[in-house]
Length: 101
Image (tube, rainbow, N blue to C red; front, side, top):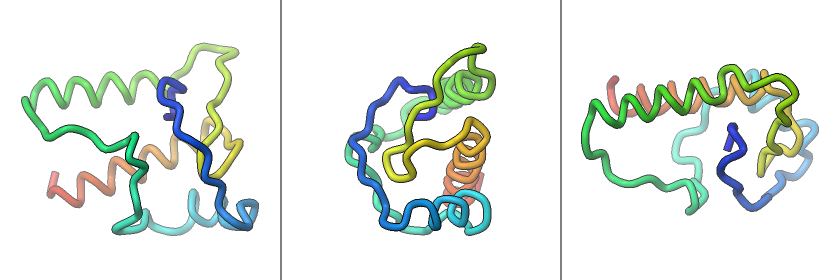
């Protein structure tokens, strides 16, 4: 989603303008948060290949080319590239902790 390659249908949160800064910058990533069906991934197959795929995805959003439009978040609406970075870090860290990595 953060790279703009995957379009997820919008499901705006109520009182988005209040919730967005709290969720992105202050609150921990929620446990058992629902996942959009479009985002459900396959089972892990090959550790090395999966790590390489994750690194490539991180690189793709870490430094987007100048003038690249920032994708709209399906729940938070228009957010900055920095907000996308914070969300990406929190999401990846959540899964690393979940699986003891």
